Length: 75
Image 1 (cartoon, one colour):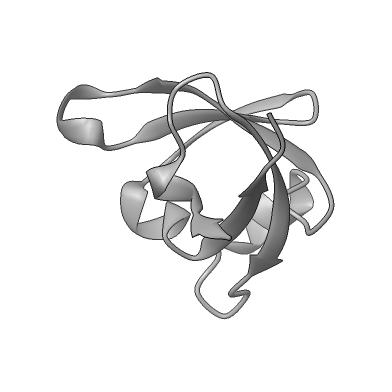
Image 2 (cartoon, rainbow, N blue to C red; image 1 turned 180 degrees about the horizontal axis):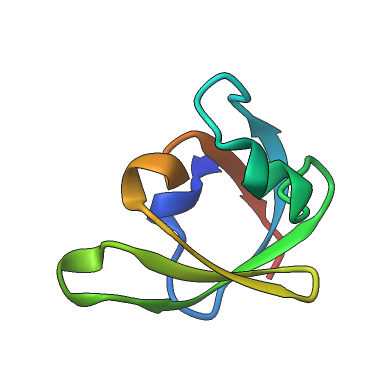
């Protein structure tokens, strides 16, 4: 299990756990929940923010927020 900010470009993963007290409610509403698939699409300069795909939603989140989402690589 690794934090989402350590995921490499193009890697597919599954969300294992999230620290909900540190995660904005909007991310949870958009599908950032344990069991959902996630992939890293792009990183901005200096690696912040990162652009991810959760199921069919595309989101940009800050690296600090991504550290609170833990994933398991599936491919």
